[in-house]
Image 1 (cartoon, rainbow, N blue to C red):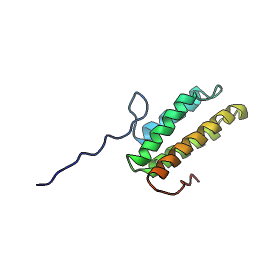
Image 2: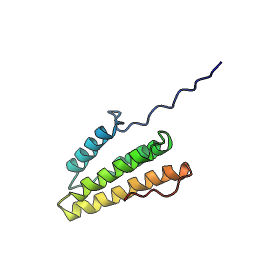
Image 3: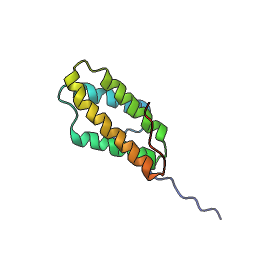
Image 4: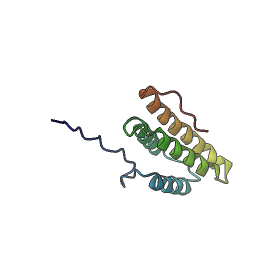
Length: 114
């Protein structure tokens, strides 16, 4: 007899349970636009970092996590106000740290986001 172990549930982001790259990119763009001036809330940044860590560890999809971070970095780079961008740059760094944490947990090297 073959014993089948079900896959763990896919990590999802936000109450809307987003998981596809297209949905996540749209959400990132809207998030940055909506909070362009005041910057992101720390708890939102922490939630995204944890989600992308889970993508690396549970989904085992480092490419997806890196793609989302690069997209977020690009959207932030399009901001016109340097003051606004400074707050978002810190958020991008924290999100990258979350991806690298997941990579460390999997025994992978440091992730290259370039």
